[in-house]
Length: 113
View 1 (cartoon, rainbow, N blue to C red):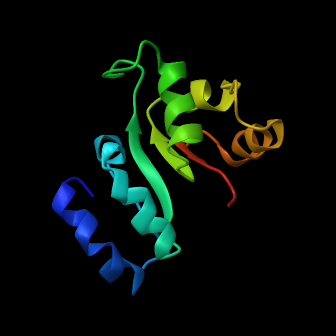
View 2 (view 1 turned 30 degrees about the vertical axis):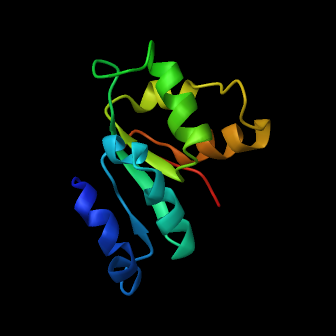
């Protein structure tokens, strides 16, 4: 998912998919996560990059916001080693353990719901 107009299609996606993969910029659209939750879809955002942190002051702040505040279920990243080593400041410790066990060298990270 790359365009805000695709958020309106989430109910259609739910008819054949278990999850969606929005571009991280779409997470700012307040109704994306609400619609995904309403239709019981997991959300794996893409692509978290250390060299493209946008409004964030660091990659760690980006991770904190996307994994905790935006409550995505997983991320795609070009820096799996950094995501795996990430120690969240506000997420429960057991959530961070699940993230670390789930990520490998593939660049994909997921939390259990």
